Image (cartoon, rainbow, N blue to C red; front, side, top):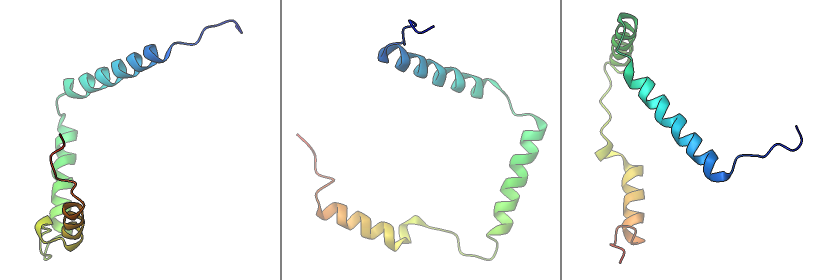
Length: 82
C-alpha cells in the first residue's frame, strides 16, 4: 500500500481532459424531456414577468463598461502585439 506509485502529472492532465470530454458528450447526448422543456418555458416566462415594466438592459449604455473600455484603450491593451 505504501509502495504505490502516484500517476504522473501528464497522466493526470490526460485523465482530466478525458473526463471533461466524456461529460460534454453525455450532456449533448440527451434530448430534452417534456419536464425539461416545461422548466425552460417557465423560467423564460418568469424572467419576462420579473422585468415587465422595466427598460431592457442594453450593454452599450453601461457607463462602467465604457469606463473600463476607455481605460484599456488608453493603456494600449488593444494594440497588436508583434
